[in-house]
Length: 177
Image (cartoon, rainbow, N blue to C red):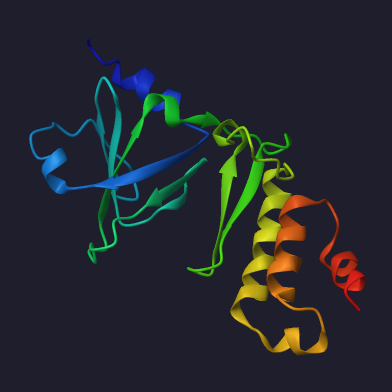
């Protein structure tokens, strides 16, 4: 199969995608197809895209996340995503949901096309999602505020309510006073 490099760049423009970190060995025999102004390198294959970069998250007009390997301390990481992993981004549609990892103390956003059947979180616009992420990160960073509540596991309960409802943080906290 011949890859159309221009079409490939257009296909991934303005998208959401979760890349999985791979080893340098996976691209060593590939020819670089594109290098961005910020220095990221792209390698297009029949199965998907390899990206070598020292920055992940918001990349130009796209929202790309990397699931890193635990043992790699290198600043530059190589990620792979299949063509099916790219989903159209939108500023106005409610297409994003949140996921929480209480063990790692991290919150992540994801695209509705990645929902599993049993999941039913609240979908939000990009702007709404960013706002709730900021609120959750503040709640995760500091435990002092939990002393004002008598409810056990208050932090988890409030965060989960933020993820699974459209209530404001103020409305949720009011429930527990």
